[in-house]
Image 1 (cartoon, rainbow, N blue to C red):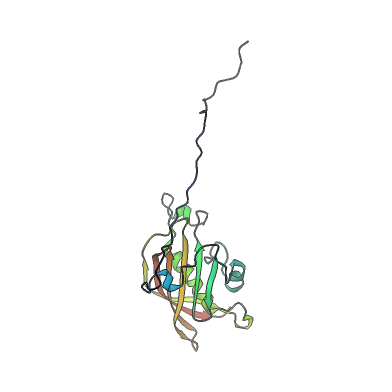
Image 2 (image 1 turned 180 degrees about the horizontal axis):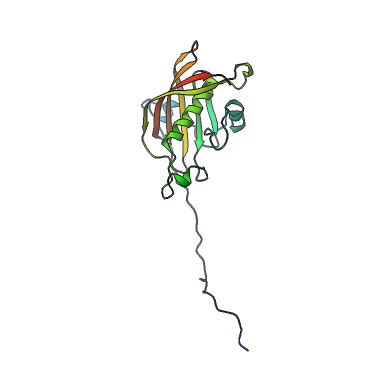
Length: 198
């Protein structure tokens, strides 16, 4: 007796295994006497999720008012109040801006790189332990902004924000901000922040 089953397309005997590979940019080993613009000199060589957080995402959320999808600092690894901070944003394909920027070649928008550095700059000025001094910092200006290389899914955007001028009377802060992926400088800007009421 013949089978009444309809023959479908034949399946290959062995299906090759597909392995997704995340783009990886390795950190360069930098000599101690290297030029000051290198990540080693900036204190940003301690990258990656295995480095102990000075402030994790929960502590950042207690300090900053930003929330998903606009909270762009995942961890702070170095911090000195009103001086500087080093932190990073892990960029993944799941970030909500990639479907539109750009579908064929996902790149983190430059304005969001600047926003991430501004949020880190806000963390420089806000002490999570000082509950009496709650406030917000707003953008007052952006100068000398340069985008050096694209930031893509799989990258860790390591940022440093350093206060260059602070007028306590008027609550105005100037911050030199830089962003690196590995040893490559990808973004830099001079940010002006203004203190506002919560």
